[in-house]
Amino acid sequence: MATLKYSRQRESIKEFLQTRTDHPTADVVYENMKLIYPNISLGTVYRNLSLLADLGEIKKLSSFAGADHFDGCTERHCHFMCTRCNRIMDLESEGIHHIMDNAGENFGGKITDYSARFFGLCEDCLKEMQKETAEEKNKNKT
Image (cartoon, rainbow, N blue to C red; front, side, top):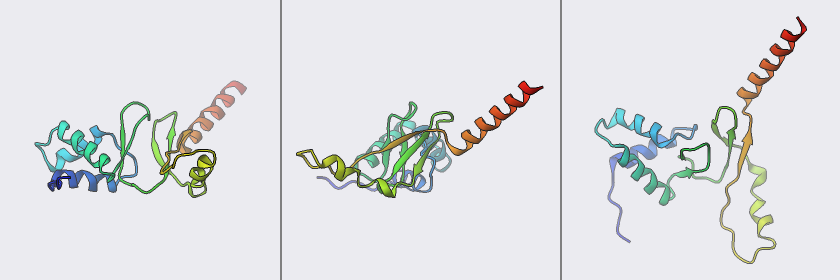
């Protein structure tokens, strides 16, 4: 396999993702990279994100509310998506890593990885909904 030529733009994209915990989309990455590289194209950002994901240097999160999101943390971890605000966040999941062993008990092949995604209401949306419910109850009392 040919050696991959170093790219400052690709390295900047990777470093940007490693500083973020909000799992940005390619458009968000592009807008931030334009601040550093005013002439960078959206196509360049997409190609570099795809290459970094293929190399395992970042994670591409698909099937979350439309656009792909990207994660600079490549260590095994789970994600949570709020079904109200669509925010994606890392989920502490130390107790779930045994799932590969459980899944492989009756499987003749070899499982090497897994991806677990959880959906529901984030803490902020839950508080907001509880507040709205309380306000609605107070309105109905008067």
